[in-house]
Length: 53
View 1 (spheres, rainbow, N blue to C red):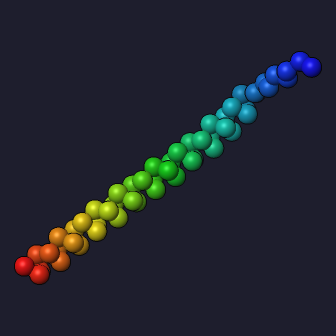
View 2 (view 1 turned 180 degrees about the horizontal axis):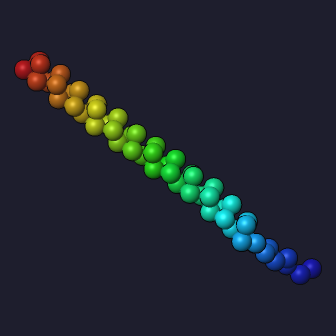
View 3 (view 1 turned 180 degrees about the vertical axis):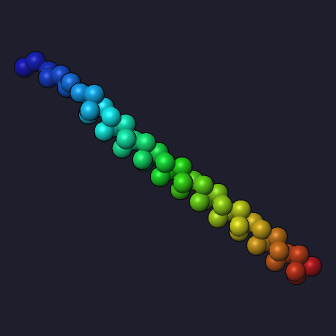
C-alpha cells in the first residue's frame, strides 16, 4: 500500500492561515486579559496594604 499525498490548493492554504490567525489573536487577547487582571490585583493589594498601614 503506497502512502497517499495530500495536496493543498491556494484556497485551502488561505483558509488554514485565516483559522490559525484567528486562534493566535484569541490567544494573545487571553494572555493580555490575564496580565491586566494580575496587574489589577497587585494594585488593589497595594492600596489595601497602604490603607492598613
